[in-house]
Length: 171
Image (tube, rainbow, N blue to C red; front, top):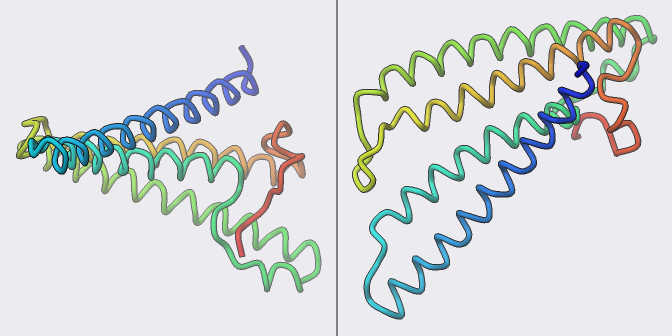
C-alpha cells in the first residue's frame, strides 16, 4: 500500500470515527434526557461520556480540516506579493505550523502524564483519555501538515483526491 492508499484509509478511518462518536454522543444525550425528565432516573455518566466524545471529535475533526487545508489563515499579504514571495510566505507559514504542532504534541504528552493519576468522577476511568485525544489529533495534524509542506515545495497538491473540493484557507 502506497502513501496515497494510506492517506485514503486514514481519512476514511477519521470520518468513521467522528461519525460513530457523534452518533453515540447524540444517542446517549437523548437517552439521558428521556431518563431524567420522563422516568426521573438520570444517567449519572451521560454528561461525562458526552464531554469525552466532544473532545475526541474536536481533535480528530481538526485533523480532517488540516488534511483538507481548511485551517484558518489570512492570505492578504501572500496574495498581494509577487508569486515567489507569496510562495515563500506559505512555506514559512507551513514550517511555523509544524513547529507549533510539535510543541502542542509535547505539551499534550506532559498533560496526559499528569492526568494519568486521576480518574473521572462518574465512570472512574483515567482522565488521561482526554489527553490522548489531543495527542492523536495533533500527531495526525502534524502528519498532514508535513505532507502539505512537501507538496508545496514540489509545487504539487498534497491530496489530489480532494482537489475538486473547495480547498484553501478559511477567511
